[in-house]
Amino acid sequence: MLDDVVFWVLAVVAVAAGVAVFRVDSMARATYALAVSFVAVGLVLLLFDLQFLGVITVLMMVMEMAIMAIYMIMFMGMNPALMPMSMVHAKRPSLAVAVVTFVVLASGAVLIPWPSRRGAPASDLTVSLGQALMGSKMLVMMTVSAVLFATIIGALVLAVPRGRYDRLGDDLRGRVDADQPDGAGQ
Amino acid sequence: MSELASSPTSTAGIDVVQTSAAWAPLAAVLLLATASAAASLDGGLAARAEGRSLRSGMSAPWAETARLFRQRRRTTLAADVLLWRVGGASLLVLALLKVAVVPFGRWTLGDLSVGVVWFNAMDVAVWAAVWLAGWGPNSASSLVGGYRFLALALAYELPLMFALTAPAVGAGSLRVGDVVAAQHDLWFVVWMPVAFGVFCAGVVGFSVWGPLSSPLGPDLGGGVLAELSGIDRWLVLAGRWALLTAGSAFGVTLFWGGGAGPALPPELWLLLKTGLLLAALVLVQRRLPTLRPPRVVRAAWLVVLPLVLLQLLVVSVVVVGRG
Image 1 (cartoon, rainbow over the protein chains, first blue to last red):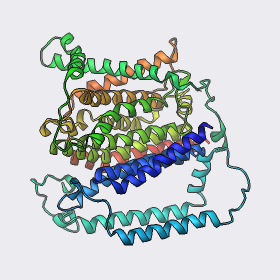
Image 2: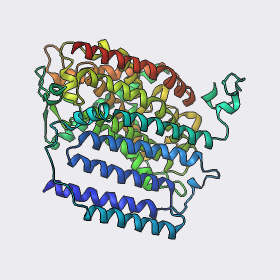
Image 3: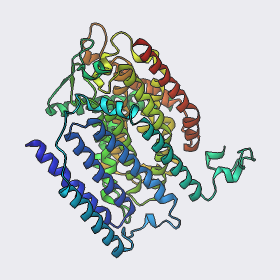
Image 4: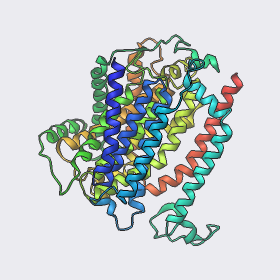
């Protein structure tokens, strides 16, 4: 009973905060509305006794949104991020894409013949998760993390107009400008 | 592996019992009392350094509290009041959520099987809180302060995560009670000194304190604090002290054997050790200069991170070697 109440409260919060992301007029509010939505989803995972996954979702999502706040100021040239602005662009195409995606996913979830459960959950789900990640799924995790990391670095290299490699040369042996306030090349 | 998974917190005689949430106010009172003692100590030390009497300094936090409780709120133009208030009030709440997983003797408010990760999640939430407090007032100084904090957080958080991992690996469990029990024979600080040091630096970081206090720096006219007044300012200031206290309590639990000690009951030992670590942090911080964020980032990623990874390797090898 209590679980039901908690679930529905969290579910409503998650969806309402998700809607708020597109309704508010400030980057900061949109960012942290998304964070609230994710945190609610993470807490829902706790109801499934997935304690590690639930808490780590909260951790990662809050961290991610805080980092997004850095990026949104860093890469939005004339700083509209600091001003009131609409959170939606290209309304009609996005609406169409959203509706189609929702219908496909929702009909899939409803129409698919779900298999009945085989076996029982492990006694400690955190341990079995760790063993899966460090055992049978190790190759996938290693590949995915390398690809993700390369993506981040690539995006930064493309986006930053003047990094330390520009200032100091490819071998980073160029002269350091003592007046430069950024410590990256010191 | 499986015996690590299934053993419920009873390996060394300490059975951690989850109490009802009705005890949370008591935990909050203890947290605030310890935090205010630390604030008094700091005020006393500051007064001594300026040649005033110790007593006048020790009462300074109380006088400031009384002043702020009576002060009217200052408002700024086009402030994002909702996010501002949420950010400022969160620090105190997060500190309380952190101590919720600390075993107080035999009792704990939340006996989570992933208590160590919970603590970590709460200190990441401080990122959001401080940035929001900086964003809210629509003031350049505050916003720069908020961004400074995120820069520092990027520096201290990763080493802090690995420092938290070391005791968890040593105990073979993410449950805080198990980590305490695993220190029955030897406190983790003895063979994880680097992790302990890095953890303390992380505590200083998420409390925006001492060397890592540039987000509140006088060069920014107070940074995140610049536009805060009245009860909002008090919440942030008290929240920082509470975070420092919660961090000390957790450090004592992970590295100093928790409530372990002769003669006295474990609850008292936990309070004593927490007070000791807290006082040490206050004393050391007063002697260190505030560091510029870029310098901190560089040192953290190039020196501290490899060191704490080495520490983790040592711990892992020892754990594997023990079998």
